[in-house]
Length: 252
Ligand code: SF4
Image (cartoon, rainbow, N blue to C red):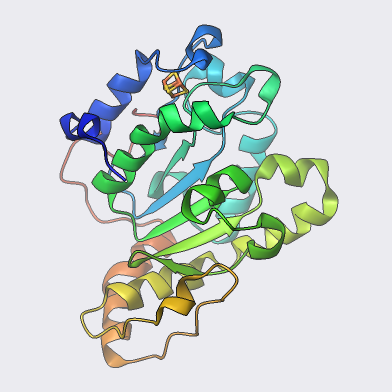
C-alpha cells in the first residue's frame, strides 16, 4: 500500500531523513533517535523487526543492543550472511516505552515509511521478526505456527522468524530460531526461482503462510540464476557497489 505522501521519497536516504524528524505518533516524544534502518540500500534481503530498544534508541541504529542485536549477530554468520548484505528495519521507527509492543495507531502512522522502503529496495526476500512484523503481510498469520516457512508474497519470498527477543526469553524459541535461520539460503534460492524468467507461478494457495512453498525444481535456468545471483549473498561477497558508501552499516 502506498499513500500519496510516500511518493515524495525517492531513495532510502530520503525516507531516513523523513523518519528522523517525524512527529506523526506519540512515540516521537520519548525517543533519543528515530531508527530508520541499518544496512545497505542495495540489499536483497530486508529484515523487519517490531520496535527497537534502549541501545538502538541511543545509537540510532537497528539491532545493536546487547540482547537481540547480539543474538542476531550470532545467527546471521551461521547462514552465512553478513549484516551488510541486508537492510534491517522495524515496523515502528521510534522506541516504544519500556519496550512494549507497538500500538495499532503507531503501526498505522509509521507504515508508509516501511511500505516505501519495500518499494524502493524491492528485496527478493523479506524476513519478518516476530508477530507484529508478520501481521503486516499476513493478518491471519500466527508466528508460533508459521515461523520458518518459506512463503511467496507478491512475487518474492516471505520468511517469518521469531523475534530474537523472544528467543532470549525462551530457550525452546531460541532453538527454533537457530534452526529456522539455517533455511535462509533455501529461501534465497526460492526467491531466485520466483524471479527467473521461466519460473512457473505457484497457485494462490501456495501464498498462504500455512502452506509451505514447494521445493524448487532444479532447472538449468535456476542454476544459472543461482550462480549469478545467490552466491554473493550466501558468501557475503556482494558485487561491487555503484554508489559510494552504500555498504556501510548504519548509513541511514
Ligand atoms: Fe513517526 Fe514512526 Fe516515529 Fe511514530 S514511530 S514518530 S510514525 S517515525
